Amino acid sequence: MSTEKKNYLGISKRDISQELFHFLKTDYGFPNAICRSLVNDFQMFNDMYSTSKILDGQLLYRAVSSNVSHGTPVDDMKLNTIRLTLMSKDDIKAAIKSQDELLKNRIVRLANEALDQGVYLTQADLSIILGESIKTISRHCKQLKDEDIIVPTRGNRMDIGPGTSHKTKIVEMYLKGYEFTDIKRNTRHSSESIMRYLNEFSRCAILYNEKYSLNQIRMITEHSERLVKEYIELYKQMKRNKECKDRLEELLNNVKGKKMVYAQQEQGGE
Image (cartoon, rainbow, N blue to C red; front, side, top):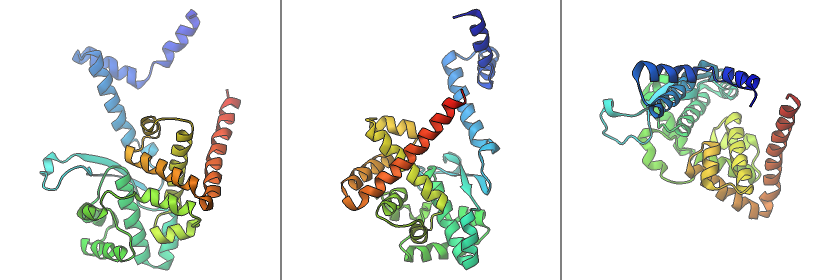
């Protein structure tokens, strides 16, 4: 390697990670392995609290992790900081119908966004976030249950059980021919959420077709093993279904097309 190239590579390493690594090693005398581990942990927290990654209408909220058992003392509870969408464009349409519709949509969205990030919100959490009484939140959760929509809160997680996730159910509805308006009305999920689930599913299916293992797909997509399994099983099931096959191929081709366009743009910019 030429001296000139080494000089440029040296500049590329002048980032906050290297600065923090050197600080931990020289000021505290930690071994290299511990320094690297602490740097990674600090970066994780920095990414979590970075306001640049919070979209319009979102907020950061700290709640109890879903794997904390009932009866655990407050001081021993593991906390997760999560991003929640307090206001979505779909809220405007719901508000035009009624404030009840708006509140129901927000309850469903917030609870499912939290669950996707490893948290069961309580009705008290929803009360604080939405500025409604616990009694009002409880009443709306019961009304949603009458619509066959179970809000995943800490109080009713036993009702949810180990069944298929809401993500997989929504993808299945789309592949079976339901339109976005039908899915939104039946599940009370926003257009953004539905599109995100379809993209997640497509990415898993494409990687599976490219012979990546379950564990590799899990690491690449950063989804849970359970969700990856559900997506792959749904893909195999829909691939065998003649009525769903065309829509499945259309969905995967759209995602592949976007990846190819992006790759060409990247190459053109080099």
